[in-house]
Length: 429
Image (cartoon, rainbow, N blue to C red; front, side, top):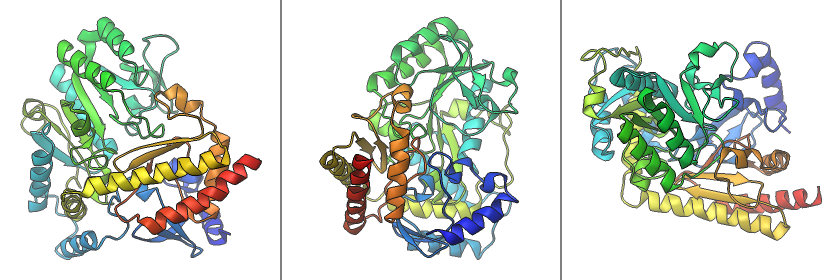
């Protein structure tokens, strides 16, 4: 069925570690051979064997307008024709800064970088430099890029510092990272009671998307904001995934919580590599060249990438965009729940804006532990049944899915028909 993809994968494995340039692409969580994609139009992608799929990965979130949107392509062509990179300031960088700071009230100043990983790494260095403290609090199941001190799992006991989760990360580099349970306000209060004067920042995905889709409780977010304020720590929202994906002001706008620093990526690049971090002016002006915290990047604010992001954001911020996107995403999860219920398969689904999660359990999870208790084998079988029917989902039970403005009734109906057969197959397994 995927002969060309299989051939390319075997060739890639001889030259690229694991045959992929990012681990989740390897289909390790579901088994089988990853698809090699050659083109995308609207809500659909085509693999190297010429098979078409309804795409719910969307390059892992950036393609909120769908693939090859005309306005984005036009902006990229026009900008590239003038030059690919300068290593000097450009008008486009200023336009992006003006758009971001005028849209997100928590951003008084912003700096552009080239990836979400770089944005979070830089924001947390800035937090440490601003506060003069070392401890970073993060949450089990939240992913913030592959910086050494963030590749960490919870310690063996209550309120112990984390242990590295990757070879090559010395324990001393995670010795100042405290890992807590997501959606547990009491653990937050306990951590601040014990370590408050040492905590530089708390960083979290305000809607988790890297342990699948998990919504926060409002109490959890409010306790974070209150605790950080009381103890002089900074609250950092990692909105690399949720920024301009769940609403026009991200998760912070939806929940009414104002972080001290925000990191952005994905949608603000429109499919090209762009990241950003920003926040309060007094914090941001600790950055070089005006302050002592060093951060730099040769390709930061690359004009071609920024032009793609600006074109995307101009479409996204038009009136009614998120109402339509949310309605379409909600229709997807409602329809999938209906098909699962008809087949008698334990299943739940949830969404927010253009993000969604699928779970083989009776209710959407609220914690990392509940995510881990989902039936991964059922998901793997469902994934391959959907793929065989022309629907491309994230190849992992621990990743959120994404709907774009290009998904229409035809894509939803095709998805439901494929899901009907997939759930029926699970019932008979």
